[in-house]
Image 1 (cartoon, rainbow, N blue to C red):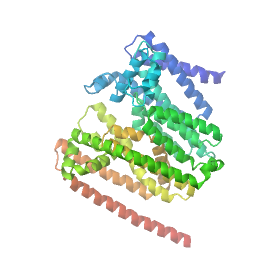
Image 2: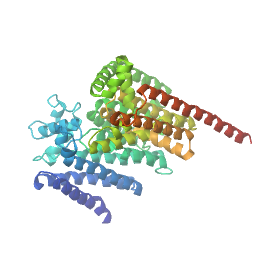
Image 3: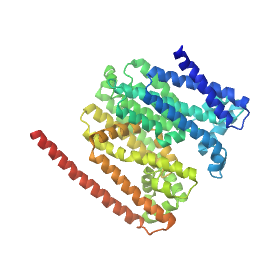
Image 4: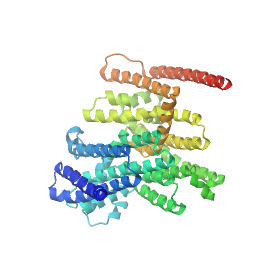
Length: 515
């Protein structure tokens, strides 16, 4: 009886509470939104709680899921109701949307929901706000089924949030499969924490965006490729179904995610059961596919990147200043490098902005800047790891992650929204390589991990004083490229002293072996 109360009664009660909160803060009549919202929320809470029970709940996982839900739904509700005051004088903000894309797509989803057209019309050219149609169709279906009399936009936030949060469970199960003897290892917990609380993951889940769905489905794919007991035929069917879903949400990002997970399969123990995957010949078609994809994508990416870099220059006085010095031929290169550091932490802290956006962008930037040094340290971890298969598995995932981060930067230039948004779609792989590397560096007290953080700290300090000077004029700073030169010298000193320290450590190890 107690189990039935927990698995059925609790979801219903949570559905009532959440539906009442959503309805209380809305402008709509209670009857027009409460019952449909209660049904929607209860169904998803039923799924979440029963999945949690099936996977074997732990205090750690329950805490992560609970806080993740509160942060995402709380931010979504607060911004929906208050962006009219906190946001800028633009239609999306005045309508309670964090992103222009969310505003356009969600309004067309409502138009489709109240029309006589079928849901699959979302994939036609009549509805242009969603490039792929998947999220538009899902949003329209939710409106049509649960709140046909009210454009209750918070329900779409609830939907994408629940997909994202259920992904935490699948990620945890996949990580548990990798460490069967010890359950969730410390590095696995770090990966889960990054996936759950990375600021952009919370932000995009608090709006009607496709990224939280991409993350949730990616987590399902992660579980599918790491679950050892799934039969080969079932694995193929499950992987295909979730791949189709992710392609409907975002084809261009989805195809890269699917390809990355297929490559990850090659490092799993069950590959020995499949002759094709167990053969070294499999490497040849993989290389051919990559070359063909790069060949057909090169011109599109390059031309789109050039246009994005030009738009960036037009909209940024800082970029105009740099381009005037280095010349237009290096505009794309600078925009791509600039994009790697977006959101720029010193700029987020100093540039004039409304308080809400200053806090939001500062937290987003802090999250990314905490991860960047560990990403760089990942290549050091590769050389530290002794287990051959684990070592090359890590290198492949690290390479895919770095490639995607750089590709995002090239494609979106220095844009502080699109660049991190593209990057976010690959968060599972990024969180994985960061969690594994950070745990190793922290456990072994690796001096390289500390050096990379020190280098970034120096970088932030230099640009912080540069932005303070630029916006306040309190003191005079170095010209931009002189400052870059000084930074390069400091980085060089950090690198050289690190190499000397590494040589000294190796000598001590050799002496200990001899003794």
